[in-house]
Image (cartoon, rainbow, N blue to C red; front, side):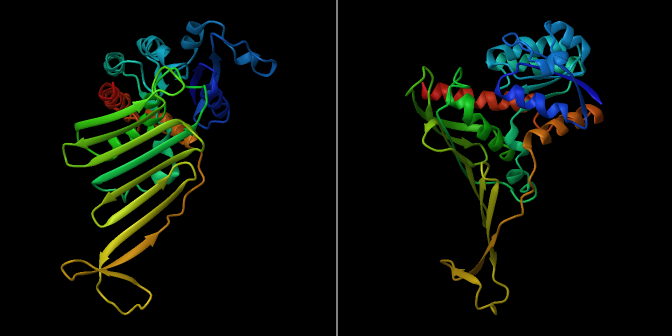
Length: 316
């Protein structure tokens, strides 16, 4: 069992704390939060000194507000601790770059909390998504004061930025973006269009002032269309294949402009009911125990932050 601690017991930190108590890979040693006092049932887990907690563990889950990520992660990595950092990885690209380099020098495993990578509606498509040409992402949320210390791009859109970067193995070439501040000092709604060097285009829309929640992504690639509902955990695949035999009267057959016949196939993969946060815990543990690269590495967090910041610049 890997000795673990949590720093920052807000909304997400509390979830991590609860699940770590039940983990098969981590032994929860304790937690630290500068703003909270322990309740009766978890008094034994509470550390009133952050350095004592860091010295007592092998891995740390950093769930503070974003401005404190870098300082805490740097301290932990310099003490050769493995770090899990909630997204976004840090406030600035230079801070994230420093953490990447520090982790390499100290042989520390680092993972960033882009939890949608572990959503079963997405993971069931590992062998199906290949070289997408057009991607459209909508991430809408009802207003919630939590997380508004950063723009909607770093709060919500960054989830989809990470997903797209994991699928499109190419560098961004052209970026256009527009956004509006409605309630907060930072943008509350944003639309961005990113064109990659390989020709793929991704459209991102994120809002935190919507009347309903939505987390949907649609992908188009050669001969197929894929729809992912991250919120409802549903996936739909529409494939187009050449007609070999046309003896099924119920088959959906279309004919293109050159007279070639294609058949349309619908598929709704069975989605396993898995807790995505437990899955990312398990993946983090596996990278520590096996010495492998985390599924969502610090480099991935850095790349997502870079693109998010470029979108912010274009919007300004």
